[in-house]
Amino acid sequence: MALTHPDFTIGIEEEYLLVDRDSLALADAPDGLMQDCQTQLQDQVSPEFLNCQIEIGTQVCRNVAEARDDLKRLRSTVSACAAKYNLAPIAAACHPFADWRNQTHTDKDRYNMLAGDLAGVVRRMLICGMHVHVGIDPPDRRVDLMNQLSYFLPHLLALSCSSPFWQGQDTGLSSYRLTVFDNLPRTGLPPRMESYGEFERSVNALVDLGVIEDSSKIWWDLRPSHQFPTLETRICDVQPRLEDALTLAAITQALARMLWRLAVKNQRWRLYDRFLLAENRWRAQRYGVREGLIDFGLGEIVPMGDLVEELIGLLAEDAAFFESLAEIEGARDMLRTGSSSGRQRQVYSDALHAADDRDHALQAVVRHLIEEYHADL
Image (cartoon, rainbow, N blue to C red):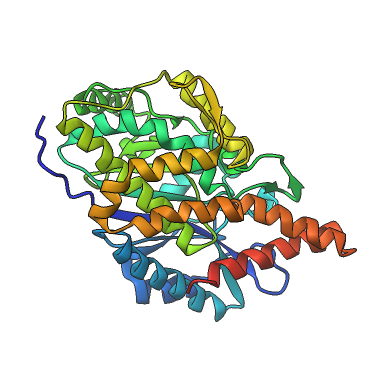
């Protein structure tokens, strides 16, 4: 396997929900809105599965500094176009009080096929995620790093949680989005693969049977991209704050290079059973940054503060290479202010204590999410 330095370029994809600025309820994207966005952003914006969603994707970026400029432009343009229709985007993984039963899916062949194939479970996909692509060649290296990077997926999830509410109820989870998404087939932690050839054979077994068209229908938390020569993380809830999204992207990029550096030294990150990694995935989904994750080497539950400090130290060389130390250290701020899930709960609690009712408290959460989306633009 070649050990030439991969590009480690990054691309960020985000899904947003559209809300009415007056009622703060979800709203379908008018045809004119999508046309306005596509006129300005071309193929960097597209409809998503539900009519109340919109998806953007950055250009290929060398580092998070480039990604910041592009992501800010994309978020700003979507916001400006939406404002013409009295709508606002929010970058939260779930809307606090919307009912999935009232949503309709986008009338496109791909989405019509999904609705037919996946029946009732896909109708509940009122969720938004954030995907980070990291450019890695050759393909076998992509799969080798997928096996090792899986260990860190719960860390990324814990920092990213932005979906505590579902249909007007506090779920008690920090990422309810993942609970909904896991109802789909071919989701969850990726299996361990020995080579890209093994990945292709596994995919082709389903393609040849007509079960799926291609590997784009494999929705693991981390996967080799079907469309690009990248490894794609899909574990994260979308981030209300632009800077938090960049922190997660910077950590993902640096993790990939750190693991590649180990390979250059003929070393690798220890591979743990998927059963054990799934326990940390659940802890992140349930508690976010509050209760810590299991360090299987130590045999202890370690607080997220300690894990973040360890991660910053581990990635120092790679952060220097990409000039992204400030963004990676932003994980400390994410811990200090709490995940979006914690902030949303605080807004809800404060509104209730101000003698508001539940409905108005939930609306206060949506207003908070609108403000956070626009804070860094």
